Image (cartoon, rainbow, N blue to C red; front, side):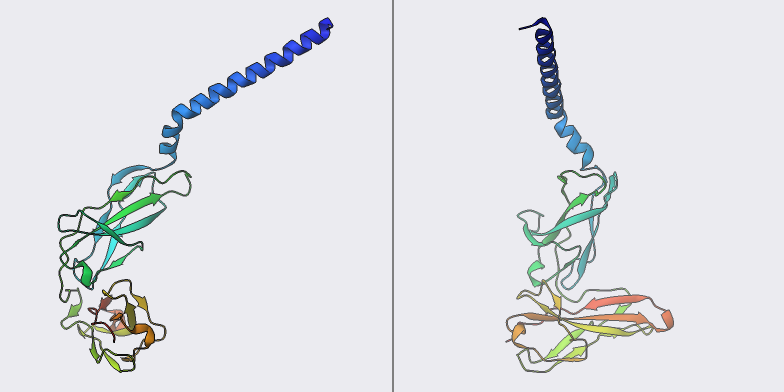
Length: 241
């Protein structure tokens, strides 16, 4: 081998050895700092933990105060949990931003696990904060601001083909009925969905209602803009036959 070729070969080998060494060092550094890097991307530091907002009674809808994070969360996912009276032995019951309390929740406590996300800082959203449990859920008509007793209710024979009637409830004088919406719920009165077109005083159950429970959601609005706005949901009916 000529002297020139020997020098060129040695140069190439040296370059490759240097590149391999640099790659190994980069890999080692990445491995050593991988956890730190993920932590910097997300989750952020929890400043205040999430809390549940609402009245712990059947028929009420609970919401979540997400708490605060640094950097700020831009979105979140939810996992609602039904737990025993001590807030333990929990079962997942929903993933929406709100949770309607039902018959099955009475005597139980509710928690929600919040997983915050930050779209500007991609990375694994591994932080999942669980709120402290609510008080034990009680039954009966809830007490709402701007609403007097009785609350909205449904009357009639709970059977397919039988006409049901909506009772809008007794609202304070400054509030007038803005809208009604009949709801079809599961067999324990949870997981409710609007029944398309069912917004009047009367509703006749159809085959899809058999074995389900119904609720009535009434929205009241202030006369001439006074009195604000409020929403009340009736207690769940017995199952439709």
